[in-house]
Length: 279
Image 1: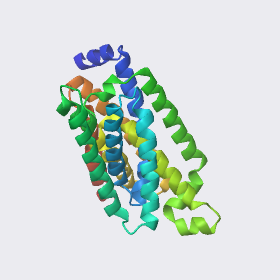
Image 2: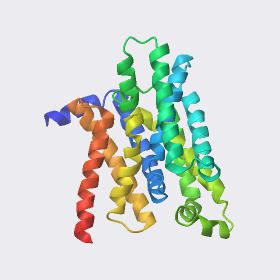
Image 3: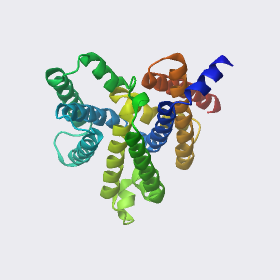
């Protein structure tokens, strides 16, 4: 009862409501994209693009941009498209290109923050960005609105192009043979992934974004066989995990990002047991 009364008291504060709203929306969008990325074996792309976003954020901070997101998002989207193109046309492909991009962007971001930062607590700033310690609880009204708009666009695009995305995900050659512009939808998926990763930085931080994409998808795949079933169930457990993680972190004063990821890990462990028992 005491914890319930404490939670009711916290819900009176706008920053808590903002955190829950943004957390639920990002978790929903991440789960939709996560299923596609896992099935196409692009699970680690979230980590690489999150490091690009970290580097872009550091540069944006250096130039004292009033809204870093408006700079970070285009840079991350461009990186996603270039990564997709290089995977097909370059001599450096797949995990090698992703590793180079990930490490390079992370190093640039950390170097810029150390050399040019005017903050008295550089380590704290870096930790917050990488692990999402407090940023989700300090969202402005404009950031919340941006998240709502981009999340709505993501869900609408996914619903409208569901059949084509399904075809491209499972058999790209067949999709091309039926007249579907597979390259366009691959690029569309990459762009949406980049957008969601930028938004998710406020929730779990740069280093934990991959968990938000992967764990709900893998959990759903343990108990469902159909694509639609996996998509819907992944969305449900991702939203529940994010909301519960934020609430627990507020009540227990634990880091938001780490709490959500650990909860997702527990959910995966439970579903893994259920999947083995049912097989």
